[in-house]
Length: 59
Image (tube, rainbow, N blue to C red; front, top):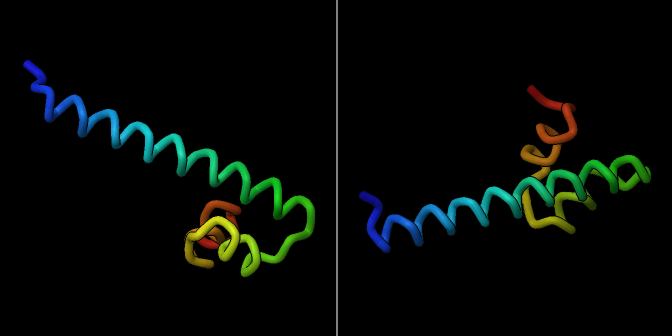
């Protein structure tokens, strides 16, 4: 049985996942508009390394 605390945690994880997915989509759009990886990272609040992974520039 899922307790209320567990439900809250699941909801928070889901929201975080959705926000991260939307941020990844935004990063890809900005990169497609020739925005630099450094500027994208600064705009979305993630490291350059993470943004490069999202864009397929880093394994």
